[in-house]
Structure formats: C-alpha cells, structure tokens
Image (cartoon, rainbow, N blue to C red):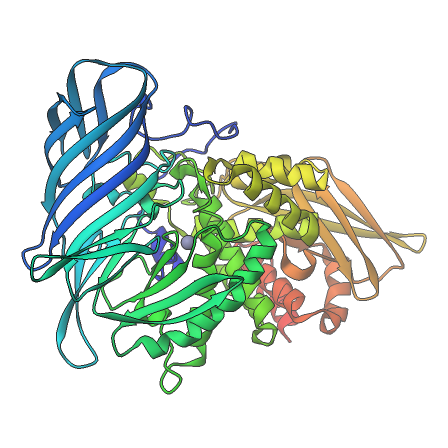
Length: 605
Ligand SMILES: [Zn+2]
C-alpha cells in the first residue's frame, strides 16, 4: 500500500504499544492473529453474483480445508455478511453463529470433524458498500460527462471478509479461484487472467478467472466497469494499464515505467515475476488506500497512475514512477513473501519504500532522487525523536491496531534502516541476501528474523545484532565525536547516547550503529559502534573526517569544537548529500538544545 497523506498526519492518534521482544523466525503456529489454527484453508473457489444497482452480493464458496486438530467448531472471519448455510463433505450441515463485533462466524458441527482434508461449502449474502473498503461501488463522472459506476475491492488490512467468509489473516495463505456475475458490458479484471466469460440471462455475464498461486487473502482483488486498457510486455510478461474508457491513453507513461521496472526487479530479486500477467488499474477518485499491491492487479487512485502530457506537472511524472515502483516491489516483498502478522508490516512497507527510490533513481539518474530523500529523513527523525515514538516492530493485537501501524515509522524509518543496512553490507551482499530470502520463503511468510538470517548468510556478518537495535527499539542514536591531535595524528573517540527532542528523561538505550566515516582525500572507514567507545584515526591535525558519509546511516552526529572546525573549513568539498546531512544534524542539535544556532548558521553560510 502507498498512502499519500503526509507522514506526520499518519502518526497522529497511534496507540502506544510495546516492542516485540526476542523475535524468532516465522512459524505458522506462532504467527500472530486471532483465529484458531486448528483448521487451515488450502484453496477457495468463490462464486459471487453482484447487483450493483441495489448494492447486494450473493455468494457461494467451496473451501478445501486441512483439519489439523479434530474439532466440532470451525471459526473463520466475516464482516457484515449473512451466512445462510455451511455444509461439510457433501452432507454434514453446521449450525452457524456469527459474532459481528469480533468479525467472525463459527460453524458448529454435530460431531468432531476428523483430522485431514475436508470440503466446506458456504452459502452467504451481504452488502456491496459505498465506502472504499471490502467490495464497493465507486461512482464517478466519465470523460463523456455521464455518471458511471465501477465495482472495486480493497482488502488490506482485513476487509476480504466483507466479500467472502474466510481465514482473513496474512499467515493463512491459500489459492483462490474467483467467478463473478456482473453486468454484461463491464470489463472485469482480477489477479489472474480471465479463463471464461459466458452470458447469464439477458443483461449479465459470468466471468471466471484462473487460480491464483498460494497467497494471503488481503491480496485478492476485483475491478469491473467501463474500462479500456493499453497493453505492453516485459521479460515475456503481458502488462496492462486499465482506466475509465477515454482515459486509457494516459496510462502509457505508467505502462512504459512498468516495462522498465519489471526486468530490473526480475534480476534484482533473482525470482522471475511469477504470475501470467500484471495489470494496473486507475480508480477514479474514491480510493483511500492511495495505491495497493494486489498480486497481479495493482490498483491506484487515478492521479498517481494516469499522466496527461499536456496538463500533468513534472512532479506528477516522478510520483507516478515512484508509486508504480513501490507497488511493483511489493509483488515480491509482500506478495510472494509476506509478513506473518501485521507486527512486521514494516518488512512490506519499509522495503517497498526503499526500493521505489532505488529503482526510480536507477531508471532516472538525472532526477536526483536520493538527495531529495533528505526531507523524508528529517521528517521521520523529527517524529522518532519525540517521546511519542514507537519501535518499527511493535506488538499488534488486532485489526484496528494493524491499521494504525501504517505510519511514518513503518514507511520512513523502515526505508532508512534498510538503506543503512545496504550501505553497511554493500550493494552486492545485500542484494544476494534478498535473493536468498525470496527464494527460500517464496509463497510463504516471514518475520524480520528470517531477513536478518538471509543477510547474515550472504554477508558473513551478524546482521540481526545491528538491525534489531534499530527495529526493536524506538528513537535515534546520537554519535558523539571527540577529536584530539597528538604527534601529527588525529584520534577521534566515538561514543553514543540517545537523541531526543522535548524528552528530558528518555530511557537509556544502546544501539549497534554501523558507522561509515570519511571525507575529501580520506579513506572510507567502517565500524560498528556499541556501548564501548571506539576510535578512528587519521594522519594530520585538521583532517575533515565526517561520519555518516553519504547520509546512509540512521543516526545523528555531534562533533566537538576542533572536529567541527575542520568540517566547517572543508564543507564546500563535500558532496551535496553530505552537506545537507551536516546541516540537518546541526539544526536538530539546535532544536534539542545541544548546540547554538550560530553553529548551524556558520555551516549554512
Ligand atoms: Zn506499500
């Protein structure tokens, strides 16, 4: 998902939650969630009939389940649906109770259902909504001036349960085969290609889609309406951009972006995009998610997908590229490999936010995207310095807490921590680790611990020890640099504390900070700074040694007077990104009362 509100807005109203402690690698049994894990879905065959005039839905689904522990009760999710009948193995009927507050239904069978494979057929009905979640209608004004109605789904975080009863938590992966009855003139797209379309009565048709790979419920999608598309391909995968009829030509720009990005990701992740097609759809107006990475059917609010060369601004062009790169990165990070529970949403979002910038920069080096990430960094660190911050990984008990987890810490700090790890490990080791992670966990789920293991394997370093200190603790380390010149050599002593603003008594914390230091004419030096002070040394007495070279690290730096004076003297010889970094840190130190404004002004001059 790529929400388009400002990051600070997103943090407002977040519940404070505790950090996740001593995380282990993914295990289905340990994965968070509220549903019992005694009965597990293997495949869904979903048939729905839609009445978009009267906003009604009628459905029947056949679910192949694996009963792991014999039980009389089967609990699954539903929200706003009415379950009329549930039948097991062609004969055993269940008594059904619904708990609308918990968004569940429980099927009570007269005798224990035995361990092993069973077939469950559920008949149900429900509303089609007018608000943009679950399955809903989007009324919009077409280019012709007519009011038109589009049928749209948006399931993340937990609204698949509004279209069909199911195990609507991310670790319950299964395959999905969708059949939908809708107005005969509608163009319908879903995660997979259409396999069959047959008329039904005089005004409707039944459209069937191919079976998806094993995936989480929140990634299923359906869009239908008066749409046309532009089509292309990359690396043998058909690509399409759908838009309300008449606007499809404005999809050309995003289509060409996707044609460049797909081969790059195929190579980067080392696993070829696994679905038989990838479509992107422009949803007119009513789409609060901003953009959503449904596997094989990426949905976008129209103004971040459609580009009108006559009227769109250059910034719109960049934004479209970034958002397309973000949602496409999720086709691997999120869709092929999914966080086991929402406490690791940052694995999806931090990675996609970092990758959107990396890919956009790769394809458009003249846009200078990386230096502009300085703003994201300052905004995120501004939030993370406050007492109200929280760790990237935090305990998520339920769906409403999961919704709140999509904030500037998951996206912004997640992106910055990933960038720091890549800078520390090196581009090749990091990419090789990602390839190993994708290959090993394809079609399954993970925790952050699984990623640290893969990166440790390819780099030979203890990545978890460094990474966990940033993902499981809130806040920002401040690296203090004290220099002293003796016998023609400058020795820099590095220590750490916690950087805060408006927080007089922060909890004492220690990070394992990967420090990259250097400067004009100096060799680059790397170390990991823990609790114990460490030193760096450079020949000469006025060497301009700067920490956080390239601004790839997630920490602030405070220099003592001699070290700062050397930097000041040589400030113009640093790259723009390092000058921006020095200014950003110096202003933050002023804001926190640890440095005078004059030091910042001297640098800015
Ligand atoms: Zn996202």
